[in-house]
Image (tube, rainbow, N blue to C red; front, top):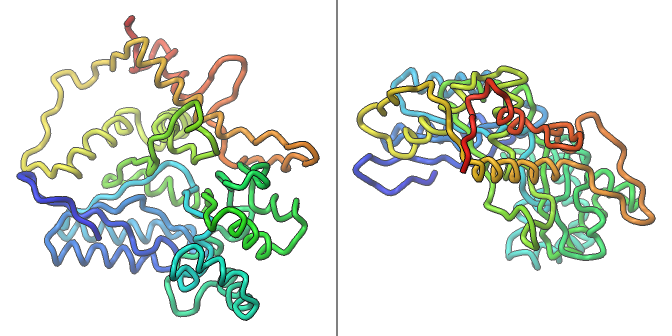
Length: 356
């Protein structure tokens, strides 16, 4: 567990759990024990259960944290409002095969003597270990979406499910996995649908949980905007406001605004006195026309990433899924109808605009 530097506001432990898969309960208990013994506040980063066999057990994990808080321990957590995370296709390969770096891993993938062991551990995990196996986490190849591939020959598969690529190449899934890694330098950024919507919603509604994108700063256009990054890079807060506040009412608007502001201050600064409430808590947020344009441009970029990639010549489009790779944030009807756009245009919206 990492900790922040000591400051006049104290020090906080930021727990990147040892595993979010089979051993997630033990990993959370370990983080809580470290915080208790070191007398550090604990902030669990992107709380989730990333193992399909454990889906539905978020109430137990929440209870574990709630009990620690009831015992006087300072514990927070955060989530991103999607049921998919991003890692690398190489994370499916067992840990021992990574020793020595990417080149050593690729040599092992080609070794006939290791093929049976690799295939067995990828499909079933490593007995007696808590290895975070992203294949078993998703429950199958359809739970993986390829973000970007460096080899031009395979660019046509960007934005497609791994199951689609296996069907397109007509080969054994393990052979396709090894081929993609070998042809792309051992690295293929991949989105994994490894935790459930129900569990994420349960975590989102907890009083000790805040919001974080777990994303990077990327461009909305130009060369640095290539590929198909996770839409959480752009869409985390629009999705929070649109889906979980306006549509599904998991949170109130006041709670959704308070979460990333007030709780973030408490988590990072651990102030010794409560933050002062504003004199007019209900005052509308004033956005200039420039700020409004920037927000809408960013969300349009996030929604564009949700569209299925156009099929390449000679290749059929992947079958449509009611779930999509990600459920769209809006319906495009000539003009943007994203949750943020609707909020900005609404006469009752607390996000009112003013001229620049």
